[in-house]
Structure formats: structure tokens, C-alpha cells
Image (spheres, rainbow, N blue to C red):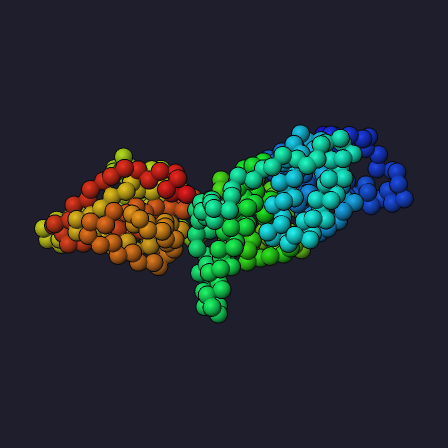
Amino acid sequence: MTREQVCKDNFETLFKSQWNPNVGNDPEMMSILQKYIFGEVFTIGELDNKTREMLTVTTLVVQQTMPQLKAHINALLNTGATPNEVREVIYQCAPFIGFPKTLNAIEVMNEVFAQRNIQLPLKNSAVTNEKNRYEKGLEIQKPLYGDEIKDSLMGLPDNVGDRVARLLSEVCFGDFYTREGLDLKTRELLVLAILITDGAENTLKSHIKGNLKAGNTKEDIVSAIIQCMPYVGFSKTFKALYVFKDVVGEPNMQQPFSQGEINPYGKYFTGTTRLNMLVQRDDMWNSSIGNVTFEKGARTNWHKHSGGQILLVTAGEGRYQEKGKEIQILKAGDVVKIPKDVIHWHGAAPYSQFAHISIETNIPDNNTTWLEPVSDVEYK
């Protein structure tokens, strides 16, 4: 199909009217933008039209372009989105752009609903209350972002940083992220559109990582960035793509030692790993040193060493966690000293290969006790 045919099909599906690029007072501009958006951008990636229109509505809310917002709220409803889903798309903007702009968008949304005979107000979608909103918000926030906001605000007078961090958990994640109508993956993808439109580079970095943890693929994230391009321009889009490459780009996997063969201890690992024993345990050297390479998402079971262990990270990005403690991010050059009998696991990041040198200490009295696999929930 030609670009014009693709554009025609998408336009008429979304707006329920015949596509004619030769009408209006500025037909040349409309022809350029419609063929660009609906004939080209809509073909990049595997996002469905409903998700694309959710992203479009989001960026229009941020920009406060109300005539276009009205048209695209209608288009979003035409994709099969429910009124509740439309409302949640707009509500999700509030923690990031503030309430006045969000209220402006809600007014436009309610006008569309009234014109379409959608009964207002819509049903209540809140699932938290005054007693649990902090805890429920933290349940979503913690696996995605840990304590990075709390840590970044340390040192402010009168410990106000702790209070602001708590407000973020209560309001952004407790009042909004928990609401019915959109799943976590969709909410995180929409937040990308907010941050791209605002040009919030530092926050965008965190939410690209959050999107990956929430289950969005790299392809989904790139498609979402491209979907915003006609509405924010090439400069902001390129900036977002550069941030994406910086955050998600493949780390350097050049290792000083060969990867070796498929790990013979694979039954104690999740995913594919390779092992190259550099020094075998024996009576002469009294040492055991191996180079272990993990494919993306691969990791050990929970386990412990009666004599401890040292890890020397040589390539990629990895994860390390001791039982009852937070997950640590590992990068080339990091050294991990694991005490005797401490239950732990280690492995690759979800989006990166990983390699480390494993050194068994206190041989010959060092034995490994293998425990249960690290679940997907624990791995995050």
C-alpha cells in the first residue's frame, strides 16, 4: 500500500469521516501532516491504534492544544477505548504537569463525553483510601524506582526531602497509578510521552528503566517516542532517542577471558550462562576461579558459600542481592565481597548481558549450598 492509502485507512478509522487532503483553507499543510502522521508514523513499531491515540492524547494534554485534543479524544474512543480508559489517560498527567492543565483537559474530555451521550460522572475508579494510599503506592513505586527520589532529596532543611518523597509515593503512585482502568505497562508508556513533551531528560532516564521493569519492550519504548514526534518535533524526539540509547544501549561486553562452554551447573541457574574455569580447585593452588557469562535476564538460584565468595565484574550490567536486602546494580569494575553463609543471588540485568570472575575463598572448607530459583517477582 502507498503512504496515501495507509493514511486514508487510518484517518477514516480514527475520525469516522472521509479523508480528503484537498479541503479547508490550508490543504497543503493538512496533506503533509496527515500523510506524515497516519501514513508513516503509524507504521513504525507494533503499537496498536488505541495505544497510539493514548500517547497522542497525552502529549496534547501536556501542550494544552485543546482543539486537537478534542479531535483525538474522539479518535481514541473510536479505537474502542472506554470512557474510563480515556479519563485515566488524562488523570495520569496530573502528577507530572500539575492540576490546572489537567483540569483544562478534563473539561474538554467531558464536553466530548456529553456530545457522545456518555453519562457523567463516570464511576469511581479509586482503589486506595486514606489509610493505605502510601503503602499501595509504595508497592508500585519500589520495584520500579527503589529509593532514588528519597536518596536524591537527602540533605534538605528539616528533612523536608523525606516528606516530599512520601508525597510522591502517596499522590503519584498511591492516588493515580493504583487506579482502575489502565495497567502499569500502559501508564508507564504514557508517562514517557509526558516527559518527552516536557523535555524532562533526567526524569525520562528513570522512566525508561521503569518501563523496562514494568514489562514494556525496547521496541515499544522506541515506538512510543516516535509516536510523539509529529506533536513535539524532531529536536525533542532526537533528544529522547539519545537518552534511550544512553540508558538501554548495549553495554560493552568485551571480556578479558573467553566465555567458555554452556554452564554445566545450569540446573542451578535461570536462563543461559557460560562457564570458563580459569583455575581449578586443587591441592597445589588451593583456589577456584571461573569466568561466568550471563545472557540477558539470566541469574543464579539463591545460594550460599560456606567459605564466602568474591565477584569481579568485567562486562555488561548485572544484579546482586542478599536475602532481605535491596537489589544492587553491578557494572564493569565493581567488586562484590560475599561473606560466609550469606544467602544471595547474582546475574544479568533484564536488558543486558553480564560477566564476572567468581573467586571461591577459604578453600578447601568452602562448599556451595544451592537453594530455590529467583522468581520473576523477586528478580523484577
